[in-house]
Length: 480
Image (cartoon, rainbow, N blue to C red):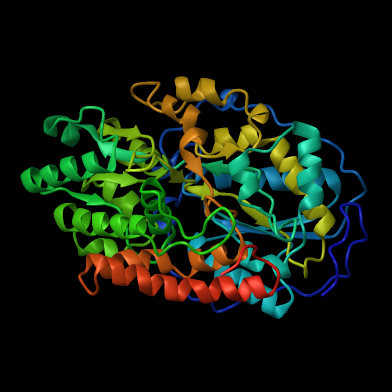
């Protein structure tokens, strides 16, 4: 394959576009959470804010003249007002720079499969966004070091969790560019947790078990932590492992999942399932915990603020009852994965990589507008680009009661880490993530199919060949 062009390099010849792929979604569509939003009817994303409160957008002339088509693929945002803003934002920029841009939104669960199909076909979109690691595609995408270096030159150091989620220290390449991320706090129903002694919600995994079991016993309301082949299960189960001192790899990219700490985390989750949940959690998709929380059927879930925003628009009483806690503390600390990590890639088959990278810089420069349009869901990888954020969190322009309900998110970087912790989000971690080895490990033990230790041993047997494969290609460091 051709080498990555420089940021100011020559654009490639045009090719035909993939028209369809016949893909099967890896989970139910999330459109039910985000359809039919408009300024007059904000839809399930919650109340509209004063348009005059949105930050002014800026424009900088590209470093060279742009032309041709630019095809963008990204997820259908959980907060639909973002997509309304984004589509117009793209077209406004494209008009100014002389590019014909098209934007396609699809369910996030379909994106990794779509990327693989386009790579195999050697044609498709010029720039693609996913909300979790894409490191497994490193051999087939352009190195994004040039755009990352340019962003750092303009705005200073990138947030560490975003850098670690896009940089491979073994190859010294940026397999993606991350201008933003989303925290993953605990969401709890205050009216349920107060009567069992936790007016401010649980602060530890032990308290989660204690309070959640009492709520299910006394009220019949279950908890919502998935053990399914979907993104939220991947995130929360890693948070549990890290808080118990367990991980898939160590800082040197050596597989260390077979440990007493991992077994303890799996044993804990089995007990949590038996005492606080039902079999539904084994077949959830990424919308399930959102829908359950909004419907008032869950006492606790780990999620972004999207379910809360949905409830503001459809179930205001539920929204007022939803409160939040940061990462829960386990035996070894309190860490959570990001709920979303915006990984933008430019495949090697892209026809207009220069326009793609120029657009990403424009998008990053205007991330304050993205934060506002997403109703404070999207956080920037450069804090200086969203100076209004902490003020918005302290006094929510989207109608939180109390107004400072989201203020705790100002410190979210203190309890957030990257997929792959304590190592990088390398290609092996990307494959393990996207093949759902970790949710399967927890689910098998929770269902009683195997012991916790056997579940861990079986997961290790799956993970070792993944690391060995990528290590043999020089894409993962460490040793066996």
